[in-house]
Each structure stands twice: as structure tokens, then as C-alpha cells.
Length: 257
Image 1 (cartoon, rainbow, N blue to C red):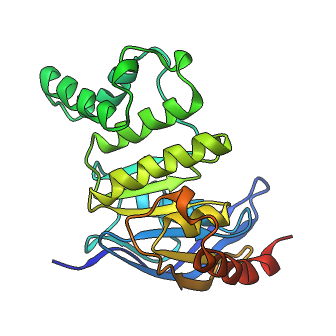
Image 2: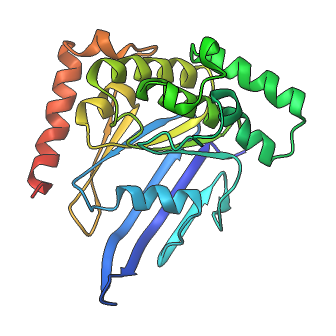
């Protein structure tokens, strides 16, 4: 069994803009991510960060190069990938528990089992008392924790996270980040996080990739050698954290316009 979870090999993506003109979005990008690694991708807006996630999820295909997941070419979406967005994207007509049950329902899991599993997951994210509440009755932080539980429900081997904590206020963000780290550290899953928050990338990830302004290329691939387990709030005044953040910022700032 390969130790590589996902790999992009000389990947280029060209799309047509609204006028039909070709746009080079991602140019000759190669990345290998070992199983169980937490990788963060940072870069200026429009550099192709989300495009990388969409290629890994199978939502789009590269123009050139190959995208592989666990040794196989990615040809389309699959149920072993959890894709989490900035907004929780919960169904407003479903309770928290029924939202968590949804991916299991799609898989055809029996009603009693999916209810048991959903309640177990909501307990893990400390929302047992809110399982019968609708999204409109939950805070943004609670909704995002329901979204984490829903993603965990399919037991993904690969998590793709696109700014999943950006909509949260500062205090709630720390709480949800810590809860996510706790759950991930016990899962063995591979995580690829796209974020504009450089501190978040360094606090959470094992490794940070900096992409250039469009066309997106890899400018820096930095290992984050901060021991685990981690708590976000314990690291903010850590000298090594601040040094790593400054190193990455030095490479990133020239790409911002």
C-alpha cells in the first residue's frame, strides 16, 4: 500500500473566462501528500488554491498532468472524500441530527444505525443537547460543528477544507479549531486546508505550501515542526510559531496585489 494519500503530477489547468478567452489558472504544480498529513495551502486570491481542492475532489479535471488519490487517477467525486466549505451548508429543513445523517442516508445505511452514529458524532462535537434543533436555532459556530460531524459521518480518508473557519468570530474560531484538531488527531485521515489566514495554517498544519499569484505555482513548501497534540490558544505566543509564520509571510507578501 502506498504511503502517498494524494499526488498532483505536473498539473496545469486552463479555463475559459466569460469572454471565452483562455486563462491559465494553475501552472505545472506537483504535490505529494503522505497519508495522515495535515497540509495547508496559502496564497493570494485567485491563485488556484480552491482549484487544487476541486481537482482532488474530482469536481474538475486538469488540462495537463495527473491527479491521483491513494494510487488511482481521480476521475470524479467519491464517498471517501469529505469536502467542507466556509459556510456550513446545512439543510435548513433538517435538524442537526438529520443533517449529520444525510450522507449516511445517501449510502443506504439503515435508519437505526445512522441515528446512532449521528448522535455519537454530535456528542463528539459537544452538541448532544442540540441534536433536535434546526440550523436557524444554532449559532454559526454550532452549525460549523454540525458540518464537521456530517463530514465525519462518511469516515473520509481525505478531508478537503476550503476556508472552513473563516465565517466564525475570533473566540468561536479557536474553539472549533481545537475541536477539529482533537477529532482529526484521532482519525488518521489526511487533511488539505485552503486558507487566507496564515496564522491558522501554521497553527493547524504539518506543512504549508505557498502559491504564487495567478498562474498558481508552488513558491514555498514549509514543514511545520511544532509537536502534537496542539491547542491553538497555547501556541499564539510561541516563539517558534511566530518564526515560522514570519518565514512564510516573507514569501507570501510579494505575491499579494
